[in-house]
Length: 119
Image (cartoon, rainbow, N blue to C red; front, side, top):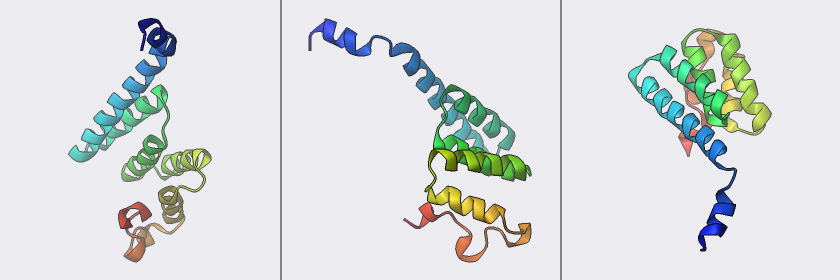
């Protein structure tokens, strides 16, 4: 492919690529924090990722982390963001349903794990 065609294809994409790169880096940081059990850092990294480039995964994982931190309202709000972007996301529908149950009845029995874990 001639160089000028390649330039035309990529012109104006640099800023968008930087946003995606920053978002991806924050997601990597969030995943590491989640593995390490650092909920506060995971929340901060997920918020930074969303600020750079909102994704369904970041909103969903942010909802999960907020629930772990004891903030049910933030968990529900982020779950709602997921459902605004993808109304049929099975894991978000499951999570929202579990949040509507009394706390002692959540994530028990056949509803212990999200639908994606059964695939």
